Length: 420
Image (cartoon, rainbow, N blue to C red):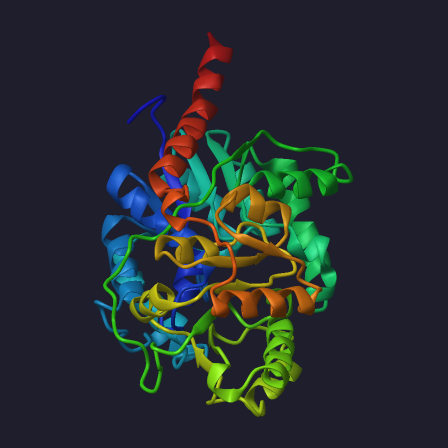
C-alpha cells in the first residue's frame, strides 16, 4: 500500500439501505464505486454499517455479499429473528442486514461503537464516509475517541442550505448541523466540484472551521449492455430524454410547461416525444398528479419511472438530447452519461455544469421556458448548432481515486513528518 500503513473503514450504511429498492441514485452510485475500489485496491479495508440494533463491521466476504445484492446476482433472503422481533421483517433493508450479519467481523450496540472500533482497528485507520449518511453525533463522537483514526468525508452538495425551498421541511436545519459537525472534526473533505467547495466555504464561515479540502470530479459507472427500450417506445420519432429523480429541484414542471406550449405550436405529427426516466422523490405530489393526468401522457409524453441502466443507454443513444433543467446541482451525472452515448445535454446554465461539461453542452436559463421551447424546435428542425460530443472530456473514476488515494495517504505522511 502506498504511503504510511493504515486501514480504510468505509461506511456502507447508505448502500445497505438501498438494497431491493430499484436503480441506484447518484450518491448511491458514488458509494458503490468506493465499495468496489476498496475491494479491488484495499484488501485490508473493513466496512461499517449502521443497522436496526447497532453496527456491523464487515470484511471482504460481507462486502462481496453486499455487491452481489446490489447487482441482483444474489436474491434477498428472509429476515432473521432480530428483524422479526422489531416488526421490520418485510423491509428489504432488514432482509439485507440479515444476510450480512453472518459475515460480520464484529457487532456492537449503538452505544458501544467506540469500543468496537478500538478492538477491531487498533492501529492507524481512516473512516471514510461518502454517502451523506451515518454522520450522526454518536458516530462522529466514537471516531473522535480513536487517536489513531482519521476522518475523511465526501461532500456532494450543500443544496439544503443553498436552496431550502426545494427540500423537505426540517432538512436544512438537520443538514446544516451535520455539515457543521463534519467541518469541526474532519481531517479531509473530498468535494466533487469547485462549485461545491465554494458553497461549503460560504457556510463554513459561520461554523468556525474549514478542513483541508480537495476537489475530485466523479467518474462514470462502467458502461453496461444496451437493451431495447420499454414496449411502445417509438425510436424512429424525434424524442428527448429527462433523467433524474422526480423532485422539485430537477424542475420537471418546466418540461411539462414546455410540452404544453409545443402542442399549441406544432402539428401532432411533428410533436417531439419526451421520455421521463426517474423514480419519484419528495415534495412532488402536485407534479405527479399533473404528470399522471397530463393530456399528452402516452402520446408525446411518457413517464417510465426508474429503468435499468441497459435501457437508459438505449434511449440516450437515439435521443435528440437530454433535457436537464435542474435548479441546483452539486455535480450532475446524467449530462455526462448522455455525452458518453453521443447525446447532447441541454442543461441549466449553472456554474457547476460549466465546470464539469465545458463546451460540450447547450446552456439555458432554467426559469425561461421560451428559450427551451425555441431551442427544442430548432433542434428537431436541424437548425441548431450543437457541440461535437466526440470531443467531450469525460471524468473517470481512475483519476478520482488517484487524487483521493494520494490525499488519504498524505494524512498519515504529514503525521509521520511531524513526529520526526
